[in-house]
Amino acid sequence: MSNLNALMPVKLHPKKFLSNPLMRMIVSTAVIIGLWQGLVIGLELPSFILPSPFAVFEKLIDRHDVLLRHSWVTAQEILLGLLLGLTMGLIFAFQMLLFKPVKRWMLPILIASQAIPVFAIAPVLMLWLGYGIASKIVMAALIIFFPITTCCYDGLRNTPRGYLDLAKTMGATKWQMLRHIQLPAALPAIASGIRVAAVIAPIGAVAGEWVGSSEGLGYLMLQANARMMIDEMFAALFILSILSITLYFGADTLLKKLIPWKA
Amino acid sequence: MLMSANSLGLMGQQNAIGIDISGGYLRYHNSLEATIAGLNVRIPAGAWTCILGRSGCGKSSLLRYLANLLKDTAHWQGEVTTLPLGNSKHAIAYMAQEDLLMPWLSALDNVMLSTQFGSMPSRIKKTQWQFDKAHSLLQKVGLGNKANHLPEQLSGGMRQRVALARTLMQDQPVVLMDEPFSALDAVTRYRLQNLAYQLLQDKTVVLITHDPQEAIRLANQLYIMQGRPAFAELLVAPTSPTPRNFDAQCAELQQTIMDRLEQDYE
Image (cartoon, rainbow over all chains, first blue to last red; front, side, top):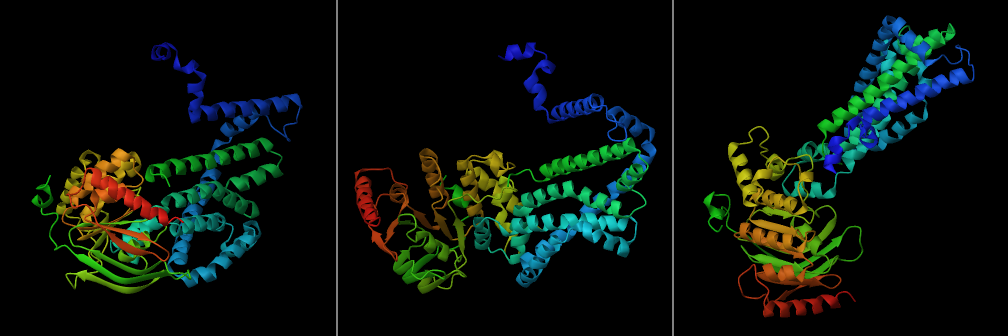
């Protein structure tokens, strides 16, 4: 069997070839682009409804300076929003864990706050924080705040009882218990919160840009749409999805490295 | 192996502690019925006391009470005297059925877990002495070459051996064991019993188990807990030195215990 494997060129081995996630992604991207192009040709869609993938690609190269400048703004909003939302969520979760009254009073407010769509708050944020980057950072932070807080709080609360018992018999104080047992035990749960946050933070940032801004990918998309430059809109959309995917896989890889044990 | 216990000055520092319980009564706050009542148990210093009983009979509750883990959840009456008098109630190490290794710590760090806690956490001054002690304990349980492995890279038997090393690191005069070998296969269990016996020689050990064979192999003092609420009854343990090889006397005792335990299932 091993001899046979050695003789066969690896590239032609379909199972092995597709076991690499990167390869799978390339293959599925190629298939999607193929279908897209087929749709454009087959239905004879005009380019202001659905531009061909090649037109979009051309736009990506032609306007790369503009696209890059706006991407950088959106990326900043997303990353800073993530940072802010993460910090707020962690602080909140710790407060609820350590001070029971805080939990009793804050949890209902927290849940009620989620009933108001972040999009509805966006105009108010523009009013208070201006058209600049700040309002978008807060939007992104607000949208990830809830999942981070709940994941972190659940993680901290659901420490296996045996761990706590053991630490207690070793004479751990409340603070030592939190620092050495509860926090590390909660890390896998917090990590799933961060993964979710990495996916939805871009939504907050772009929605904020739509409501009112002078730069960023969301702004660019609106402008392009108004001027019927659909290919440019798709180019911006393409970059945005690349940004989100990179962010997710980046976070995922980093977290797997930092938290190598299973939950 | 005998000399190793004292050669490094790891053990035998404290005088062994015995515990006397008389008229023990335990009721959980959320329950109307008592779990334990009229319990009299004498745990002699420096020996193995095995407490047998079916699952759910209250033997774990007794151990958890002794480990001071039921302070907030249960009501206790009765006298608990530690001998010699005046010894701290907290001079215990606790070993559970699960190994309770922290999955984020290496085997070595798990062994050293107790050094993080207490009034003088040694995070700042994790001394060379503690490292050496933890290393030598890992070597004693035969895992000297696995010091940097995470728990998930170790087998169940290895993990329980790390837990044993962690217990020894605490170096407390009383060791409370709640069925620590029950999740292991027969041969691994047998070897771990021998290892624990060797390494815990001058400790006062309370071993909770539902396995009569295990109790008979290891007990200097043998109790059976049964009834509802549960009480304890002293059985005559064989006089031969532990850990015992199974002979006719042991087999006979096992039959007696089985008969007794069976009554409790009705």
